[in-house]
Length: 355
Image 1 (spheres, rainbow, N blue to C red):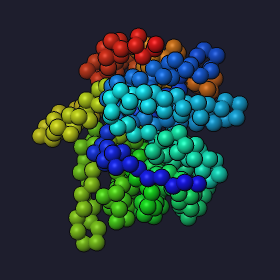
Image 2 (image 1 turned 180 degrees about the vertical axis):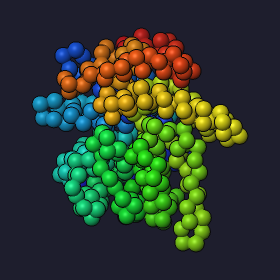
Image 3 (image 1 turned 180 degrees about the horizontal axis):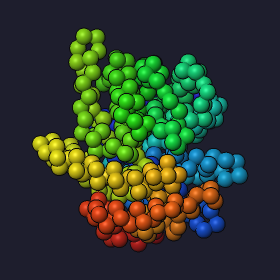
Image 4 (image 1 turned 120 degrees about the horizontal axis):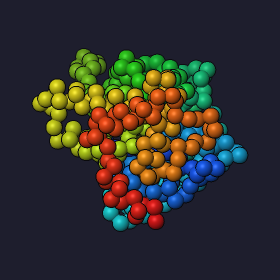
């Protein structure tokens, strides 16, 4: 197996911080891949100005790997084609990230496929290894890192993740081909465990931190952590987001990160916290927080359906539906925070994206 590293441009973008939406799966009413709308989603994100796409991840539905569904490779190929087309026209660097899951054999096969298709890194989920020891998990991660750069993934337990302690993250951060970590435990204590571990690993300047905490996006992005390590204070920031929440209203997510970088919230903490609360409230509706996140994927699909990007809210699981009152909650946040949606941007471009 060949080992690859991030290109200088990709590494620069990753460390500058960017918007990386988790790419949904577009299905038709018989729950088969809707290629036209799958491409339209990629075009929407790219034209919105995102800096990368994460494909084959939780929001794409892990079930795409089932033998009777067999959509893992097709969705990676479609996104690759759209990113190729976009970069050839714009000359912009786009981070190409593929989700990887499963035991070591499966993860290695998926990582190699991603590498062969030109993906630059993999978001490595450990949810399929719930009972593995730290050392077994670390050996698994080291093997995958020999194939392709890896992004660690601290996934919240409510949607299938597992607890990963400070000691795990400290050793994980010392793996040479770890380039970033997506922190998504939806837990401030556990998020700080990762930050401390990265700083104490000695590789703080080589690992980019990304928020996956859809419940705390803006506060994560505004926080400068200070950690004492070897007698000195080291500062570290979360530079961007790799988020399911950013699979909707993506144009405004790009604007949000631009405003953060410009310092728009740096001198007005009340303004920042008010905006943070609006985003968190919206996420509660989209992710179905009231029902322990059961409707987290269909909630995103409902927003994309309203905007015309998806035909319906179908997922690969026939049991997936909007939870009771979830539609009303989405109605509520749409009405409460019109400044957060990008309906106008989509309406102007939808016809072209669907060609």
